[in-house]
Length: 517
Image 1 (tube, rainbow, N blue to C red):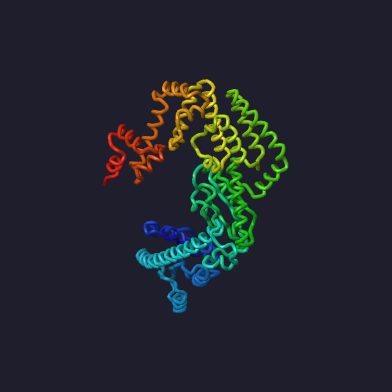
Image 2 (image 1 turned 90 degrees about the vertical axis):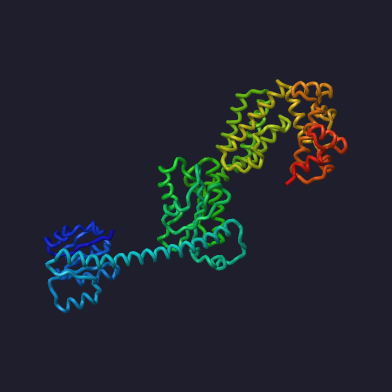
């Protein structure tokens, strides 16, 4: 659809042109009318039409003067002039001004349609060239942006020589050149964010790189080459306003101090990252500035002694409640400890909770946990997740202690099974050794073990070793002697005899059969 402005000083002529043709069927939309040349210039610069139909003779400013003024600022506008005057001067001036077509008054429908068809072809060519130019510029801008973002990613994530001079950092990434830089780190609280969504909302030149330290996070760098650039404060307000209703959980936006060079930008990024991590950890959505995160650490340092004393006493009370199996008191105490951490923002929470887990594991002989490694726990970046991990750990400690106190035989048997699974490769492992580990006599251990599992300790140990040997014969090229040694059976003849009783083939035959192509 192309747009049309009609300029005619005669009211009836002007209104008649509006209804003269079925403009929409021709792909044309009338966006305004003007009553003389001066009004036409004002309307044209405001509405920016594709086509202007104008009378030549009008008071104040004639149609050709108006066309000249408009073309200075809108060179792609196409003009059709209406005139009942065929004077040579007007014709020559119209040609000089590249007026695209003309129609003589009184205007005939067929003449107007023909003139408009010719002008529309010109408009289509202009639009096509404009679109090609826009696509070319977008490709060039995309390439320049990609180069700049690659350089930024290398700088921010320590993948570039920190001794490089500023001009070396800008080589091949000139779009990064600016007087100042603002750094933001955006971390989603519910789901991932789309880079293009952030670019569109900010509406100002910016660079976006992934934030390796926060899952789903992104670093947004705003260069500040002049007064028209959006600041980080303005960008954050735009994002918060847009997301306040559109997302169930507001993301965290960490903001660093303004940087006056690319080298200082890395420090600003770290400030923004720490602020975002702080917000994510404590569940504080919205904007978190570097000052807010720094002040939290300062406040904690002033009350660290009092905090640690309270924490140690709470930890002692928790252990006592666990040993007494006072379940309700255990969970109440744990919630109080989490609240203490929440109120004392800036504490080294991961280290505190990790120490608590180690202390509690002693109560259950090193057992417990939710099958997640301690590395997984330490990698958590939300207090809520750590709270859940510790709560599950405490629940399993309660279960183990309860079993240890109220179902002693099963507790001992479970421990022996774990010891066999851990030490089956030792040739020294025996019923006597295992009995010493659980502080009962060998006979008593064998009796309770068979009662619960249906097998003697020796049978269970042999079965475990045969199972491990079968797996190694099936999946590796190890020699039979090496496999026998790895499962704690140095007597190869004895190993081969037991294996054949179990599987009907010698170890060598079994390995050859299982690994046959």
